[in-house]
Image (cartoon, rainbow over the protein chains, first blue to last red):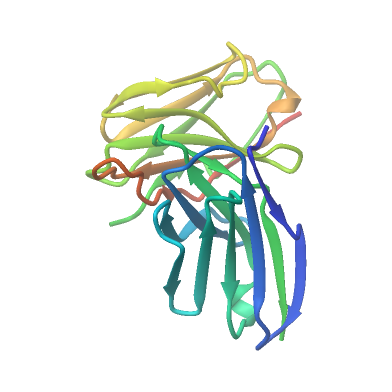
Amino acid sequence: SQQGEEDPQALSIQEGENATMNCSYKTSINNLQWYRQNSGRGLVHLILIRSNEREKHSGRLRVTLDTSKKSSSLLITASRAADTASYFCAFDTGRRALTFGSGTRLQVQP
Amino acid sequence: DAGVIQSPRHEVTEMGQEVTLRCKPISGHDYLFWYRQTMMRGLELLIYFNNNVPIDDSGMPEDRFSAKMPNASFSTLKIQPSEPRDSAVYFCASSLALGQYSYEQYFGPGTRLTVT
């Protein structure tokens, strides 16, 4: 069973809009990562935020982390059709292996 | 670098048959992970290795599943005998851990297994 939950499960937006996905977890973590999975493909790492960081940016991606609420959010600004994919949060509880969330399916309409 | 390589990409087999999935991690990476992805259960960690040694196999569902890593450049996941509920996409990933933090994992393209 998963220890991470994401919402929404699915999100459909228009090109140019922003997309926000949320992740919650239950245990203390060393870091939290976000991955993207295109249909029929493996996961691709997007960004990592450490437990002592609150916000991180990478291009059009912005990640926040609130360890007191055990939650994180991923914001994709100015979305493009190519951003259509499933997005997963994954957290490291200190055992080197990652626990993945349930994922958000993002559909960006051109 | 070619990335993580998995074979076969697709496998269709009959219940009761043995299935072997193969993985070649990225050269120099010291961690290797096997995951299973299904619609019902999402992405589950099955087992992972550090420097070819199995560290945690608590995610392996049953004794029918076994994994080996005979050297730094090759790992196998075997299911014997296979059952229809084993149908899933199996991913291999590798990572280079630096310091106390896990770093990003690099995933292979996956093996789609169908057991009829």
